[in-house]
Amino acid sequence: MRHRNGGGVIATKERTPQGSIEAPKGRLGPGIADIRQGIKAWRVWLLLTWFDIRSKYRRTYLGPWWITVQQVIFVIGLSLLFGVLFKQDLTTFIPYVTIGFIAFTWMTGMIQGAAGCIVGNGSAIRTAPGPLSIYPLRNLAGNTIQFAHDAVVIIAVVIFFQVKVSAALVIVPLALALIVVNGLAIGLWLGPVVVRYRDVGEIVSSVTRVLFFFTPIFWVTSDLSRNQVVALSGWNPLAYLLQLLRAPLLGEWPSWLTIWVCLGITVVNLAAGVLHFSRTRNRLAYWL
Image 1 (spheres, helix red, strand yellow):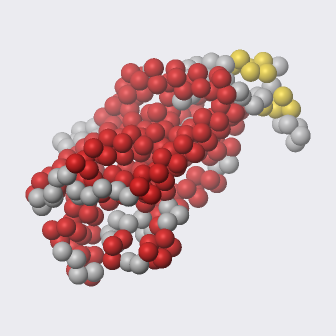
Image 2 (cartoon, helix red, strand yellow):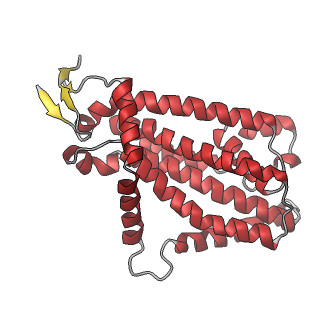
Image 3 (cartoon, helix red, strand yellow):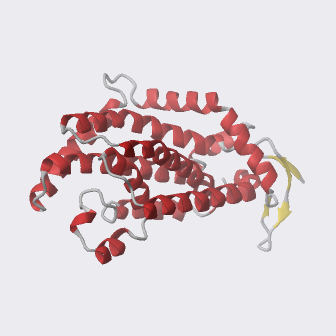
């Protein structure tokens, strides 16, 4: 029996060992083609993202800037609290915490959004043909637009506290690019996983909350021993991506270990995303 799924692909149903009927596993070529089509349709997912933002903040004066205001209040409170507790110099500690918290919020926002980017668009996927990669791209766009608003706070803090500027700023575009690629990649594999196993979404929500304490946001790695840093964040991919972005903004060069680990994380994550998305895209309409 043949069926047209949400991606506009004609797929033949097959029976699983449990007796249920679903589409066969997808192939790599059509999966990559779907991603290409999704990227080319950037006007579509940007328009949908902008519509989501406007709907969410309809009849408010500040719109998405409300989240930025909340970020500022939280960062000030966090900086003062832990700055006093850990006896830190606030002129250096506040920029450290500000960049760390805003970047961490961006990354975890993309992770949590990736968990629901397919499930949350189930009705559209079942009825509207088109590239399914639009939905991970839409999640990426929404979180990145919000980060762009919050980046104004980073710039203001860096200027106000006279953070030294160095040639290390050339690393910032690389760090931003790697975070964006990882944000798309995790949507490509985590979105389908959550569609198939709904409990994974709750697990992701819980893990991202715990990661807040295991990522160097309000604690400074230079105050700890190497063994302590490895135990707390050596296994945490977000810690490396955060350091790659924050160090240049604070006038410091990230270590070569940080750079290579971030590149490795991106390659593995992107490969997993493309492969899993290609393998499962024909089945998403049946799982929803």
